[in-house]
Length: 307
Ligand SMILES: Cc1ncc(C[n+]2csc(CCOP(=O)(O)OP(=O)(O)O)c2C)c(N)n1
Ligand code: SF4
Ligand SMILES: [Mg+2]
Image (cartoon, rainbow, N blue to C red; front, side, top):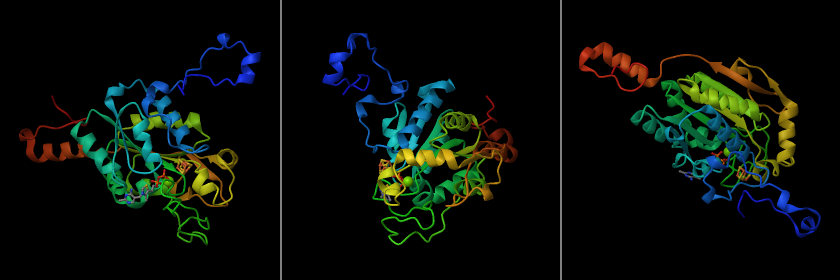
């Protein structure tokens, strides 16, 4: 079906003068590769909402879309790169950050956004996340945290809550989950926020802030996986989960990231937790090599570029 057409059933056609119904244009359609639709995501999955927010953030950012690149790893979230109408790269599992690092350093003028899942970024890709944050590489990391490995059948992830059932934890998870904002903060990220797919306006704003922020920006987005996480744990469908996010979230901008772990009993803390200035990897490199080599070094990229 052409996604811009409205579906009208035979019964409706008898009663409605369809010639007077204007086709509804999806406002973010131009940000998607329409030849790739329909997408693979399940009904009620939160990833589409995150893509919608990202598209709106890009459209209102004023950025030249020829100057923005999206990099994903493998997973349901990793498929985002393939649907965005941008230069995009669907890399191997856990390797989106090293790929993005190369891209950003080879072309320091490029806005680079990594879009991936909790498993991709914090299990197999955890090492890369730590070092990119430590280096304060100038990029935005968008992590869709659905508490599971969605694509491969709902295995336990580093974010799976205690006691939740997963295909590889049939009697309940006993591994303590990671507090992602705390890990990002401790490793050196200079912008750290958490929202849920209920908080769409805040998410659009955070994505814009993350893209503008100079340095390593991290946004965790809590998102439903009705097929492999909610169903197995008898937590209802995607709408139930969004309602849960709405009713159990508390806003605490500037919260200490040690205190924002997701538990079964505490409210979900959302907001912008960290926003600080520190030199990016390129700035540090330029400063160090200029100090050591003087005129023999030509600074590259970053704010210290001398023409
Ligand atoms: C080297 C390697 N190991 C394992 C896999 C299988 N694999 C693909 S996606 C995935 C987990 C994805 O989980 P997450 O990043 O949370 O994404 P989601 O599907 O939940 O969005 C795994 C283990 C793989 N593709 N490559
Ligand atoms: S398996 Fe889960 S994460 Fe993957 S598309 Fe379906 S609902 Fe979304
Ligand atoms: Mg996941």
